[in-house]
Length: 224
Ligand SMILES: [Fe+2]
Image (cartoon, rainbow, N blue to C red):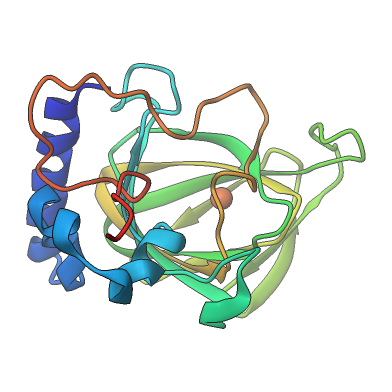
C-alpha cells in the first residue's frame, strides 16, 4: 500500500470515529517525532502492537478486500508481564469491503456493530484439515444460541454482536453504509494467530511516497 493511502485512511477513520462519538486514546494521534522520543514507559504500546493497523491483506485493492483496525488494548501471548488476558479493537468496515475467511487458533472474539450500517458475517466450522466443514455452525449472539447451516450468514444491526470461537471460519463486510465495529477478545497476536482460508498477507508492504501521519502498530521505534 502507498503511505499516502494509509495517511488518507487514517484521516478518514479519525473523522468517522469522531462522527460516531467514539474517542480514541492519546497515542492514536502521536507523530513519528513524538514516537522517536517516547521512553520505556510506553513499551506496553510497542510490545503489544497497540494502535493503527491498516491492511489490504496483500491483495492491492483496499476498498474491495481490506480492513482498518485500531488496537486499543491488548495483552501478550508470550510475555505475561502486562497481565492482560484480553484485547479491545475498533474496526471500520466499508460498505462491501471484505475481510476474507480466516479463523484464530488462540483468540476467541466478540464482534460488535457499534453503529453505521449493518455487518454481515458468513460462517463455517473448520475441520481437522483446517478446511470448511459442512457441519451446522453454532451462533452465539447477544445471549441467543442457535444453529445456522454451513456457510450461513448472520447480519448484525447497530448494537448487535456475535461471539466467534477458535476454529470458526469467518468472513465479513458491511452493507447499508460504513460501519463502526468493536472487537472484544482474548489476547490478540496477528503475527501468528490468523489462519486464512486463501493465502493472504496480514501486514502490507508500504511504498513510502509521503511522510507517515501516524505510525502503524508494527512501526514504532524502540525506546532509547
Ligand atoms: Fe477474526
